[in-house]
Image 1 (tube, helix red, strand yellow):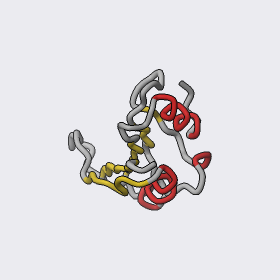
Image 2 (cartoon, rainbow, N blue to C red; image 1 turned 90 degrees about the horizontal axis):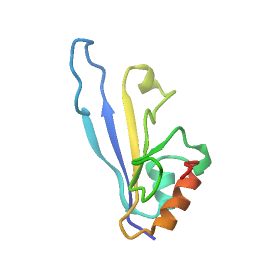
Image 3 (spheres, helix red, strand yellow; image 1 turned 135 degrees about the horizontal axis):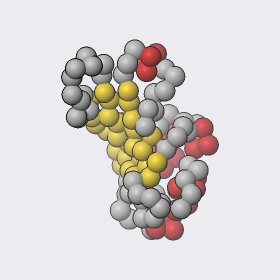
Length: 111
């Protein structure tokens, strides 16, 4: 099954007086790949259990369209330099609600 995508948003360091409303950089990490490739290439995890804190697009987690990993780069050199990056795993429309629930459980999200 293909169609999974991973996107990113990066916030670069700004002065405290600056009002930050939108990400400085946005885009796709990978597009239209299998779930396995999205995890390994897009999220850079060897296993879903290694992922950091993630949140579904809705709560309770039903008919989830994407799962977001805020501060995805936590603990990296870029993070300590003030660059904040989040990544989101986008689930394709053709995936059933039951499979969406299984994907959420795979990442430790309870429905």
